[in-house]
Image (cartoon, rainbow, N blue to C red; front, side, top):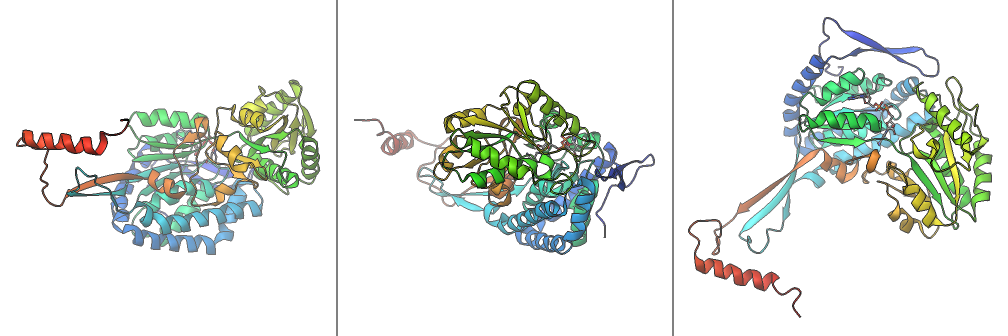
Length: 497
Ligand code: NAD
């Protein structure tokens, strides 16, 4: 069984998905029109009621079966990811394994986190019970990027489904095949209703989804597109989660394990060709360990080969951005210890380590999204924190320090920080994922991610009538005086000497 897709229109346009390493066509997909998107959303509304009616256990069981199918057929999915992004096998496997962990966690924990719970009713209303539960929103529109085409959109899709919503998913135009594989395998396991539908196309198809009356949009992509989506969603007061770009910093204190820090910096900056929203783009190193850190980074970088450890740039237009950032850094006085001026080829970019780059250059201020890092010497971690925070972005960050990690992490203006290892927070399904500032807002993953796709419903129930009733026209002066005394006894003493 394949995923339920909107019927093709008479004037159906299509687009090709290419292997970025070879330009070979690896699939052809419809460009869904606004009418087709609307049709998908309308179908999803009915499916959402059915899916919600299954309850937490019914949904968890189906999510478990879907997860088992993904796990069993992982090699197929790896192939699709490798073909459409050009990334190496191991990197595709890693993102899928992480996504599998998330599906398992969300299914298992949704009931406990979102189910009905008692709250205190307070003394004045102690004749009531108070409860809160988190109900599904209805239909969630998910718009995804191409860089981690499994892990990233599933961070929204999985949590939205576990919370009881139907999903209409618009994957990136660079990775429609991955989206189709995910929707098809879900439909195999849940054939009854179109709970998870796929729509494909370019920005216009995504824009149609924003305007199609969904109950929430979960967007992951660039900050510029996030702003457009938020503006469009404002027209219908459709809430949005924005998971946008980053300019993540890695900080190395003088008590750090410098070998481990250098290894993490090299992996964090160059893996997936640097096309990672939480990729390391800037490094601030304590002056006492700066020289040895830089030597180790350069030595490790010498072993990183584009085409082996990482793939081509998935999106050809990104080559120009990387070239511009390197050129600007060098023009402003920076030096390239590896890569540099000629690092950017037709498809691949050589790993580039830049030092002495002024803080106002593009390579330090703007998201590069390529295999580059700037390394700067700082006199202490106060300076490192100030410089790391001097960006409009605030997605992730990394700290290497044997003793001061949590203290430094607390001061970093980012949604997540990993201490003494790269990217660890992304692998923990229990931790919320998301940023601040230009990196967006709202959270996927963890309890916060489940709540993001639900609405809290508060219910107060009177169990017996109380002697003091203030919400009636028949209340008496005596009751009012009694309340006055009661509230004074309860709250009136604070501040008295
Ligand atoms: P993008 O903004 O170009 O596209 C993302 C998606 O939005 C695509 O599916 C695209 O078709 C769609 N889109 C484009 N215009 C639209 C419009 N007007 N209305 C609705 N949808 C529209 O981003 P990209 O190049 O695919 O992804 C790279 C970016 O994503 C980087 O900035 C990266 O940092 C960011 N990213 C962030 C996270 C995170 O979790 N914060 C994760 C991965 C990637």
